[in-house]
Image (cartoon, rainbow, N blue to C red; front, side):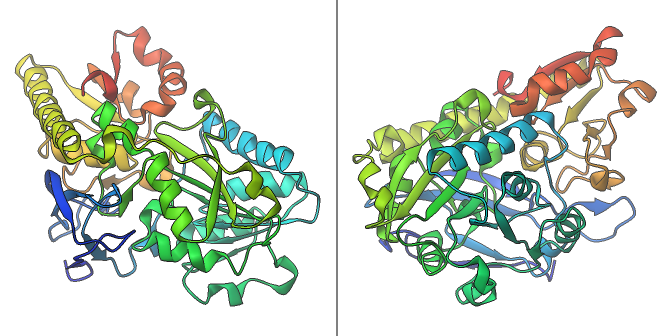
Length: 409
């Protein structure tokens, strides 16, 4: 598709080393939000995903960039309808506010602010807030909710777009955005002019490579995710950018989203620098032999998923999925061919009536489970499993089986 152009890079996205070794190659995969209408002509963007390890700094990453044109302008994913996610957002705002003594009138800026739900939690505590969000749809939702947002990416020079009365910011926040950036280390440096250099905080949530590999969650290896940090490699990246890491795991794991690595950093030399964490252990997730072992396990898991679909079809059973976010899209693209999965349920109405990229599975409302029942549901959004399990009581009452993706990997 002409809107998507692929380019290759030759050096580590963090330390610029050229000592990069591959340890996993996924088959041609789609972009996670490139949904298509049922009657839409033309093929999907599909391209292999190869994961490399930098042997010098230990960071896992992809070495290709996809020029996506207006892709993010039409981005529609949000988890804000989940009660679990709503509780997470409130807890995140409250904990940052309490532990680092924010006050009414302090400014909080979120990069990749989506529909503004996280900023609204800070706003309710008394903060002045501003979002940067490239999606036209989500920016409008945010503004209608009373959360100001600029419809744009945050790039070098974007600090000039921050109103003077918002400067300097006490908090700059990125939740599942930092690992989307093509040059996250350089990006972090662009945040420094916006932050209060004495009391500023950079709050980052990324997908934790340790959990990805331990759980064999290949579905989180995406074209959109440029880097896959651990707490140790993230600490080194932030140090290179002028920040000191002061907290890892800001909230208890039970309160975080699945696979969430949630950290707090501060500009070097700030009053919070005394809270600096000691150098963190890189563990086996930064050694080539271990990563290659994990890669082999992931390839085995993909084969198991395909066998699962074939087994169920062979027994005359119908299978559906739950969760049309990135996990669902990438898992379906790897495990199923068009027609093998009946449909995938999602609460987000903006997905309804579309086909997932790659596997071309229809996305429907959960009510479809009663109107056109299946035998089993695989929950891709396993971080919300209990909430989804509870919501499927009627489906379970008629004999439907609900299984977490983790149980199949």
